Image 1 (cartoon, rainbow, N blue to C red):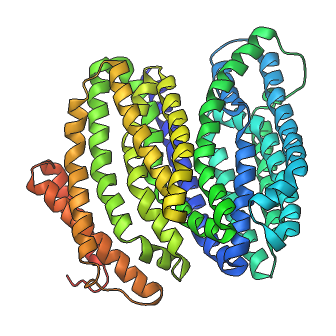
Image 2: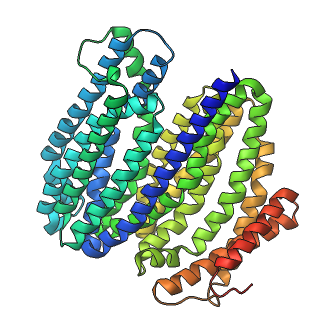
Length: 519
């Protein structure tokens, strides 16, 4: 028994580390390639590229929830006897829908292309954009073909192979992208490189899944009604959440493109992408915490889960609230450090969205508890409310504040929906809300005070031209904000002795890395 538990634990550790490594590689690939693409395409063409990839990303997410449903079916088949033929037919259903989705997307885009081109203000780039869309559609089809093979690897927990393929294709895609634009390629060549990368990823995933589990090769055939209803019902529930989330993510760029043109949409999207890359570590932490919470709650029960919830909220708030404040005051030089020159809409987007995203990630602890207790519907309500609020607020704020009104609407929608989710979660699960509010307010208050003080001192703080000056500005602004927040938390007794010792260790390391600071 102990040996089996050790094997499961070792496998979980390997899976976690492999997926973390893949995400780091993917993030680095994006950090390196995006500035090169922006520099060579220019703001207008880059904005068109952003709008096209956004449209196709929305289409690719409408998989009827079969991605999650098939992973669930494969995982269940690992512990249940029989049903292999039905499972293969279900995987065949996923493959079929992937191909159908590509055809439906092509038909919709072909029929509505004149209207889409006019709405998104593609102008003289309309022809190139259409040809690029054709290549990107091939990427959507490749993603659909990939769906059942990915489900096999995830369902049998072959995350090592999955992570390796993702990391390799991320690097390959970045190399192809940089090579294409440096050789003078435009939108069409860039889309062809993206489609080629997607096709290679599909081939590698299919080969990995087929090599290890030939018995799970998709096949076509008639499915029993109960199995089809079970998978379809589960998948459609997932589709509601994922589809709504896609609208929430992609709405900003499409609205900005429609009202202000591709250049503004592209500039703002740079800020959103950089912010999303910086969200990867806490997002991954939540992903890893979920299976651990499931295991521990079996033996610890409700009492352990309550303690886990408050502890996770506390740690996330201590990390994310000051980090959001640091991002807000250093957004503009951070963009300069990344791109090599200022992009005003990118910096403003980061400053507006950072606190909302931080609050949302902090309350990710509640989503973990809701899923552990079998209440995913609580999260679905939050997502739908967030989308409704975003849609309702976007136009009024757009008319009031111009392009900045779009990310402001998103930020307000996220904050309001997160507040609703927090209240509804505590009411539905019978947990008092006061303990979590007492846990939240000190780090949030410390972050607000630290951010305001640093913002007031931005003028005298060091800055300068180029990436070196931007690096100096980011390090001093972020360092001052984090130092002030930590000092306030220590002064009010919020941090434990062990946490204070870790903080001193981090401060010593930071001093060795900060330009101009002598030990």
